Length: 234
Image (tube, rainbow, N blue to C red):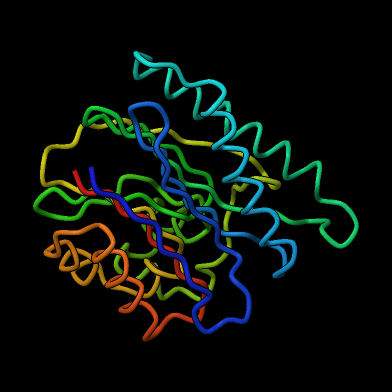
């Protein structure tokens, strides 16, 4: 497996996104967190999230774990990350929070989880969004009040319903990938500014780092947010 993590501040002064792509045992742990609550607090919250996630997997992972056990470990990591963010949300950091999307990949099996509006996509000949945003706009899509394709242009697209440090909730997803497939984890500074066909076309590139850098470059043209892409190619 070939994997890469690229994160830039974009046109902003500070980067509130945090990301990881690290080996854990025979698998790979991937994550993107997008901090909320101002640059100082947002940076801290997102860093806490990925650091705690990694620590839980380093302590709790063992070779041969079943899919359900990995899922439970992910949920535990998200809960512990939420607690850590809440414990640190004092003083100037009061009200801070962060999104988090994470995946553990082993032997072609992907177990992922998310809270907030950072996303995981699967590319397998075509692009498919796996996670479902915890956002006001997604609720409007679910209720049939707006079309999905227009959601990223909605003026309230940045309002999220769940996060670490906020109204915490976590969803999990499991699927299998084949050789030649790829997954993308991204912050909204990337996927809110690119059409899905533009994202899909980047997967013509063979290397994970090449895909990530291309997506960052494409998003930079129009994004006014921090931009993060974590890519794994099977």
